[in-house]
Length: 304
Ligand code: NVA
Image (tube, rainbow, N blue to C red; front, side, top):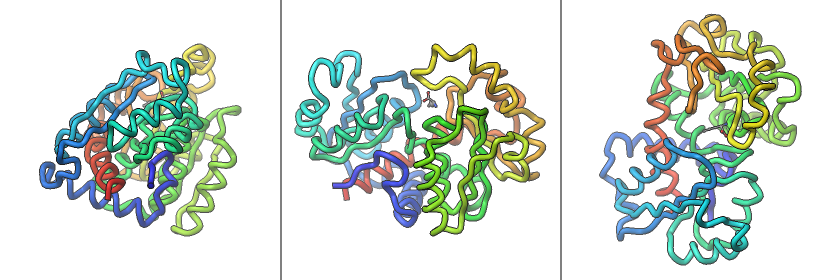
């Protein structure tokens, strides 16, 4: 049984296969009915959502399936009953379980007991569906991923930073993540990304200075400074993260063709300026759309 719990659950070759399938599904949205029946996909949210709920629901419908949205506040997974018991119950109703939750250990436990494929729709540690969408977007705008440099600026200890390290390395990219002192990536994840990169010709590094990270980058990326669950740190973070704001100055340090990316929701004037987010080099709406195409691909691939 295969799951998609973190980016490195796909080998580089498998990632390329899923991205090729996503591109094919984007070109022919109703051509594959891998959830015909309709098969049910349980989509559970323990945290806020807009893009993930919308793109999974629409994508499951396009594949001929039924998206069963489960409100984590009602299900109270791990409180009202154990994660293992929820997994056993949902695994008998659904063909796939998609879950947005907090700690990675929760989704690992779901996968261990579900008996069906489990997909990570964001945890505190990873957001692998978003990075697949971003790789598809990079392919579309820059023609390829191999050999290109991606700079992630902001909370380098966050789920997005970790997922870019692993997925960018698998895609043969040079991944630089950069953030203030105390916001470095998990050393084990950075080491894993370096190991993956050694096999793809890419690289993975933490760069202390935002300007140094942005220098010559083909892709400049940021994300909220305050991930879900960190709201109490909002005021402190606003101060220390200011030099990592993605504005015209950092964009100018990138390659002349550089694109700006953001997984959204975005806070204009905080991690990104309105000028960049709403400007000609921003590809954020393509990233948001591509969530649907890559998620259809990963669901189809896992059920094969
Ligand atoms: N790092 C952000 C991503 C939101 C899609 C968070 O976890 O809140």
